Image 1: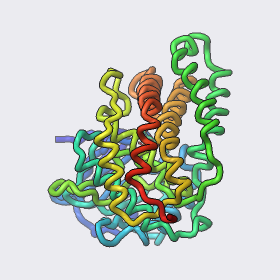
Image 2: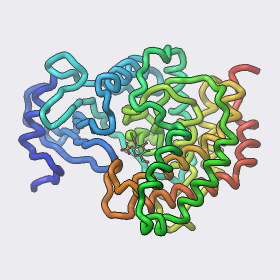
Image 3: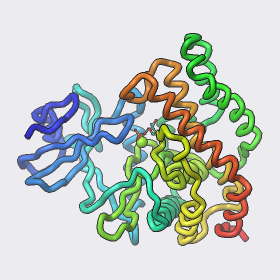
Image 4: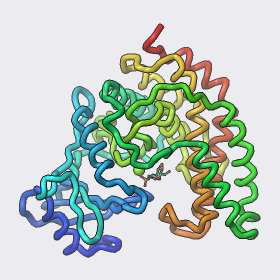
Length: 361
Ligand code: GN1
Ligand code: MG
């Protein structure tokens, strides 16, 4: 049976794979369609999944060299007890990626018997997610941030996203503005609230910057978290980015684009399980970083929401969409979660102070 490979033929993928240091075998491919940005394929030999072949979206990641250097530097440390190592397979040129007329490609090892979850209702999964994110950060805690390039400058910067939103709003048609009225009002209100909460005096760390639950690999058998995947946005940032992005996809048991907003949750048991997992690592956060975590839980869904709204107003030029209003629908779901998180801010402060110890007492 022919497998759907999107814009690529099997022959084309075979030609690209030949540009990497892999054994000459008969390979087959399966398209993985979960991401919004890159084109991703699982590579099989005799039914066995061996590699991930990926075309990096060059429109979004303009600095491929810097991006691959960030990943390469971090991967040297992302291994050890209770953290599964991912390896990049070099191209024949010796580089970590191959440039081809169709774009920039890379190959990584595939971790067998692994799986991902888009969302979960299980405390065990939330605990493991917290544990592995803490592990990722402790493994990279001593990395000099100067080694890392800002491949998407100001990626999680509220001011930048505000300017981009206002620019899109100024250009949008009255019809679009009418359709998106509720989201626009919410954005304006939340921008004021979040700006007031912002603390600009926190330590920078090497962050993953896209720690949604389905970027964590789990063992199919034991349900233990293995490692973080999708390292494209690995660059400096603040710990509350990684914390907030994980929380928005874990304590909400519905998908991030759930259309029935009554299904969008802020599940306290999952929040606490995640914190327990995080706290099972040695303490590595300063008291100020811990204090900023509830802000991160509001910031991250809001930023994703306002980016989706901006893209809707701009005519869907950034994210891949399946239908015209998808970005707006996603925005409204993310804003609904932001509101639910907002009403839990005192609760978050209390549990955080109970459960997380800082590295300075
Ligand atoms: C984009 O394509 P994907 O899912 O890895 C986005 C992330 C968002 C995500 C969905 C570079 O990532 O920030 O979390 O969509 N990545 C970029 O919310 O914009
Ligand atoms: Mg990503």
